[in-house]
Amino acid sequence: MTDISQSLATRAGVLRLLAHVLRDGRMLGDGASGLDGAAAARALRLAGLTLRHMGRADALLAGRMQRQPATRVRDILRLALTEVFEDGAAPHGVVNDAVALARMSPRTAKQAGLVNAVLRGLVDDRAAWDALPPPSLPPWLRKPLAKAWTRPRLEAIEAAHLRGAPLDLTPKPGVTVDGAEVLPTGTLRLPGGQVSALPGYSEGDWWVQDAAAALPVRLLGEVRGLRVLDLCAAPGGKTMQLAAAGAKVTALDVSARRLERVAQNLARTGLEAEIVEADALDWAPDAAFDAVLLDAPCTATGTIRRHPDLPHLRDARDVEALTALQYRLIDRALTFARPGAPVVFCTCSLLPVEGEHQVTAALGRHPGLTAEAPEPADFGLPPLAVSPHGLRLLPDLWAERGGIDGFYMAVLRTPA
Ligand SMILES: C[S@@+](CC[C@H](N)C(=O)[O-])C[C@H]1O[C@@H](n2cnc3c(N)ncnc32)[C@H](O)[C@@H]1O
Image (cartoon, rainbow, N blue to C red; front, side, top):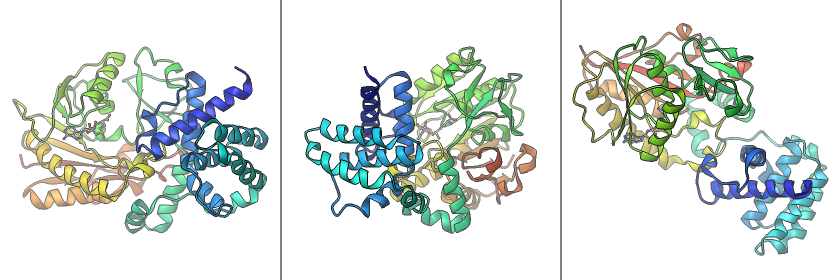
């Protein structure tokens, strides 16, 4: 394969991934670019970058085109502009490949001339790109976030999304990784890199987990020897933390496919947990647990730094369905813990309706239920992380250290 055809193949792979997200409504990480190895990784990175900057590309294109082009043509143009202005690609090669991509499909071949003309008029105009406002979240998310966190905070969150995220690892006790920064929370942080090539991967010394996602388990304190229920467990990041800390873990999840990932992760790390495939709303254990962790399904909007596809895949209807499910899961989780035992509720959402409001509502409907507000400093976190009943993390926190995912977590207890 020549260099030219390799770059073309990679860009065709990016178009497949964009169609998977924008047309099929599926997660970027589940998409197939049709490529292998380094080309597949490059296509995935470029698709993510294009999704992050899509609003800006569309704004620039809107000024140049009277009619909306075919969706594939639009994606070709979006990718080309993103590569030139955000990835430092040479305009000449980008335009040539964009025209070739249009010609590749009978449905868009006739628009190859349009692609050429539009791009030639734009790729040298960096000033026009730089003058565009930074990409913003879609209205379904922007509105409630501005209300909850103020507009300047929202803009700081959007800026954090654009910066992306470092690579965070949770080590087994005593494990270190050369070159990694040790965060005050205990997470090991690297700028990035191919995960499976890092030292300690095949030995199962650590697993990938954002610094925020590693905190809910720590709120449970010492768990050695305790029977702990990990209620929505897959793919198993928190299950591994609990098992590594010496807990007897039951890892429950409704998804058989996702539970396979738990089993694989446990096998790689040599850790043990009982795996249960069940709907938490129907399931009943033989005996109450010493601690319960409810990492409830949510919009995952706290992870947009890593998943730029999310704002394009979710909408306000998802929020409604998920908050209703969280409400029911909290009530169920409280019945699984022995009286007085901790039940950690957490979600990786930026929306208070999936965090603070859920805990306030649970306190209102369960007489005697308490929620302890953890002290942020105990976990090396800035005071901004404090919230009425729990810990609130937003992606603009720790900007100088590389940020942290958005999360909410609280420790609930029924009366002893
Ligand atoms: C946020 S993810 C959990 C992430 C996991 N705790 C970790 O740290 O790797 C939410 C999980 O909830 C599961 N889930 C959704 N509804 C459920 C239900 N009714 N019962 C059990 N699990 C459920 C999903 O399959 C998904 O794996």
